[in-house]
Length: 260
Length: 152
Image (cartoon, rainbow over all chains, first blue to last red; front, side, top):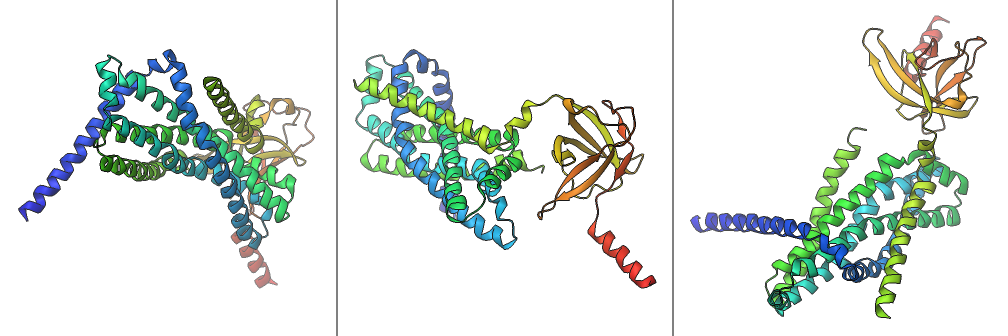
């Protein structure tokens, strides 16, 4: 019994220690952000590996999510004789929720895990220590550009996801199921508000980008420098990011749309 | 060469992202409404606003001329005070204009219809619309129908 309680306490303290390390790490990365502009070629390379290489999966998923929304929305709405409202249903669900959330989940799986594995391997092969030996600050050289790239890519990817999803919904709703093209877009514009819906969605994706990149980079730095440790850290990145994104989404939705 | 490829593809990526945001703004949302922010506000008191919401459209003869800016309850008049934001280029509404709450479509979205009167005075910012007609509440209508039936 005592052992159990002691174990519980140790696990709890371990969690606090991780949170503390992560916060200190975040502080140092944010303080090193001036390196992002000073060494812009490094940032561009990171934007390429984090952002550009996530494009394909984001665009394809966005298209399919939009098409499924078109189908499901139509099947439900046609029962009420309101198939014309399909555009609004597709746009609101994408812009408010699915765009930021699904993009963040895919982003954690595609880019976050790669970041963790890369930095974890750098740590395991003592590249980070080597940089420090040469008086190169790994925070400026390695972490800051990666963090910035993730933070910037996420909102752009989420916007792309929503836009492609709207087109996917159009393809199915108007192309296949015969909703009127004009009412698809006019309904959409009637119910989607620029500030309350689109900007709120962008704010969500900015928050998710920040959190997912933070978790990914920190898990890499904090990984045990063994092959097993890196694999565990990569898994942890995806699991913790997904939980953080879904939890934060609930809170953000409550704050943004709760008073309706 | 490698660096050049990176730069070009990242540039394209950023451009694509911004284009997507632009598309969401122009094609998906109602950003056009924010542009004509030049409006003047008039007040209208209703006995019952039904399901009227803030941002609901205001129309004259079916043409959209503004939107509902605010809805509040006035405890002194025991009525709902609705603030109407009407576009400035539609400032030729007679002072005895009537405001009614109507229902559009099957989904029951409600809007305010203005019917211009015959007064030579025009509505100014801050004026009150004196003639209003409340939203039709289905329960009241059924109740009235039943009482009419029973008196026959």
